[in-house]
Length: 173
Image (cartoon, rainbow, N blue to C red; front, side, top):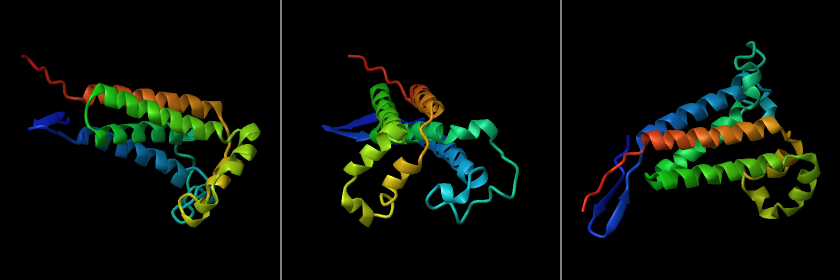
């Protein structure tokens, strides 16, 4: 568990909660395995070279359909909370933020929204490899209510982990 926020004079130093980081990295790794083991290599940027989905039977089955959205909301909420410092309010804010971001990305894949949305993607995104595929993400992605549920569950589970792994200091005086 982390040590909370320590006071040094007037400065406040945030202490990284390594338990949150470890859990987040593990869950993100498991979510990533879905793309390597169960989904076609061309379905995700950067994964075509390490994809072995055709060589093995499906490892994750039906849960693999929404596990990546769960793991993204969960892991990034925890990583953000760990980076910002301890506190249930910080954890809640991080989880709520990633719930909003992931929900917006999922809703942006809806056929009635995606074509209009890509018109607002700035041209300079083409110069950055990680952002270059943003329009493809929205136009080729599949909107799924199950993913919205898994995002909510991921953010909620991350909040529970932040509560369970946050040190509580009682100050008297």
